[in-house]
Length: 146
Image (tube, rainbow, N blue to C red; front, side):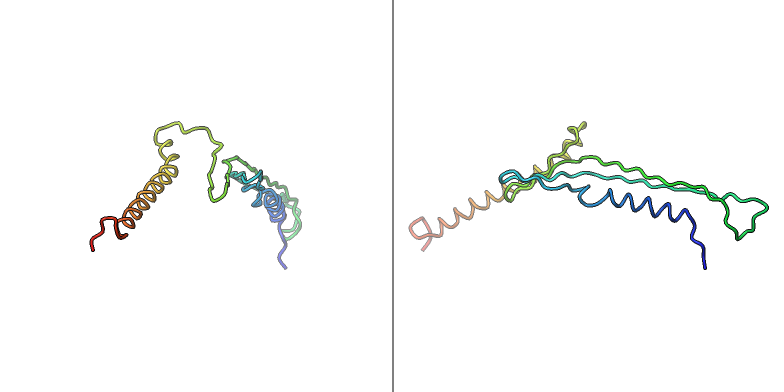
């Protein structure tokens, strides 16, 4: 029968404690609803875990005997708020908590989703206008060819 080493117990205990902290509700918080608006906090979680140990033996102990063990384990957890998801009807927006972008490239990257939404809306409106004009041209009495 193989003897279980104490360092395994240390690691198991520390990982269990980190698992208690780092559940899904830590990353995506509980929704807060007011009227027709729901706000959901979103965070970033970083975790570091480490352990170490040694056995102290003496020349009078048997190689298979219980040696004195010294060890330790530790973990660090860093929880950083990222922003809030704001849900209103069919619209979902992310409101970042971070300070505004410092460089032009950062600003451009932040604006990409908003620009895509505006371009998509513009294209859809143009297609609707074209479709309405085509339908009007196809109706009798509106200059259609017969």
